[in-house]
Image 1 (cartoon, one colour):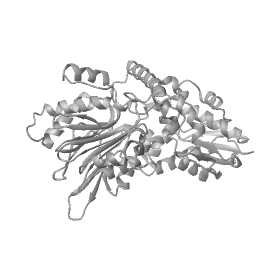
Image 2 (cartoon, rainbow, N blue to C red):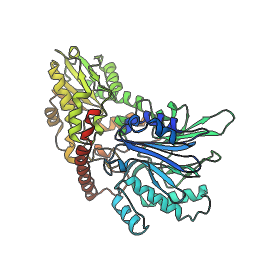
Image 3 (cartoon, rainbow, N blue to C red):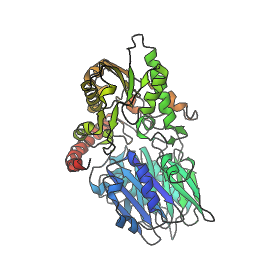
Image 4 (cartoon, rainbow, N blue to C red):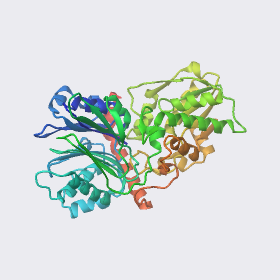
Length: 501
């Protein structure tokens, strides 16, 4: 999961890009980068850490220009070194910078073609750098003279689509031309367009992973980039061009609505907040229909994502809703930390229970999902230490049984607790008296209700089909082996950063 941003404006964009990355910080906390163009050269600053840590005043002054792109990252492909922070740069044709959100599932094949056939050099193992080189090669094949036309750009993107597989949303800037963005044919990863009109000046444009970044910058949401669509914004005349480059098969990621996106975002016209409210209503209905429904004194969310889910459950079950945990907001999202060691170590720093809300009570804890089970187990331990009588647990997502290969950090089957244990065994493992999981049909209905034009969602991690790429057992094993190596590296590389947390 990453966050991407691009902007064409009538004034310097660096401050807006910085502010936009702050808004998208939840999508990646390992690295951040900005690139701008001032008509003469491309300026880039990137590094490991949060947005506020990577950029200083001297960097902001140097990032000149009315056009630029930004990226926040946590890695699912590549590694944790600063060299793999995005965006990446190549100098031909014209100079291109690129960042992307997602994962290429045919990385090895494309890498071989890029090196052997395109005769291009790669400095990292990042699939974003690979994608950049594929795009650069296809643009060169258009044999541009002084300037690329929109038709040439879209023709190049068509060839990029033919070569790559997976889930991806791509943001690139071509020096002297403009912003080029495109989305995978299944629309697995999100991308949205916004506009802002300046008095007496040209229309300004923004593209971002989530609508919250569009609106926070004072732009008006125009529409989502469609699956399989490329969008090009000319920096000279501020004209937007778009083309459906490949046939679309809309299958947006259901986990965006469960956990990844901010609640105040719209993705493909679907409100993330309302979807989570519906998740809580469906889950509460399931509990009410349980013939052995336990006595519940209080419903408490595990901050932050599950708060609207728990609130909706409280209303349906007519049980008190209480905040039982105080969250340290200076700790990152434990789900996307690079190693198990850091995830476990940070949980106690991140959440602290309020004993009065737990002592002597039958508590229903509500969380968005159970992935590895370690966070849930630690939280349950804290709740019992705080004096709870009985502890029940409700997951707004169904059991996660398969790796995700489209850009979410849960690719190793051995890590997924629901992939190796039954629901009663999971309940015992995390230490709860009863465990409820959302039904997959209910979860899909919750999102579908927000936009009935979307018929299918990607729920591969919850037992559904993989909609993009030829995902074989060999592919899954390769991803798992690579991820194990990255986690090991992440533990060593990022251990020195613990005092910052």
